[in-house]
Length: 166
Image (cartoon, rainbow, N blue to C red; front, side):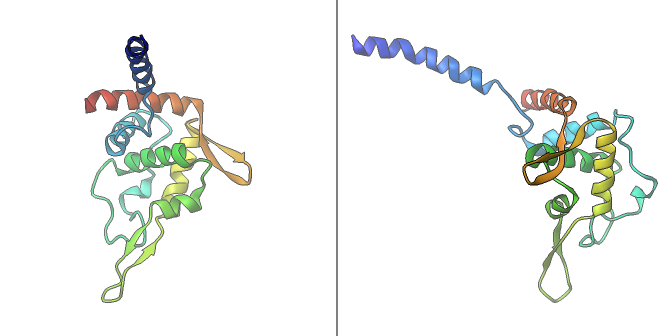
């Protein structure tokens, strides 16, 4: 009798687990594919556009050359938006560390160097102007967090990426 009851409850529990797995977020899908799709979506947003100097800058002091992609500004802005969603509230200083890398110093050993603060600051300002992020204070931390508009846009893109992965 007890075994029959256990067998009856197992399919119900499996259905509950499947319904929980149906929830897809921006952080549960592949980051590279998500950022590429988000960058395509940000190209449609009027307030997010590369500044005039974007064709001539490096993304950090540790880089030797500027980016070779034409749409690198939108890709970086999409990565910043995903990072704000993941770590928010976050500011320019932490983002500089997040987007930093190894600085080649010739024959000396490599050291860490921060990313460009100007690029990140302008990207944050553009996202804020577009209404995708806002400034907030959470306890002792202050910085930018995503808005409801950005969360819904990211969920739609995450669902799209999840369907592409399967």
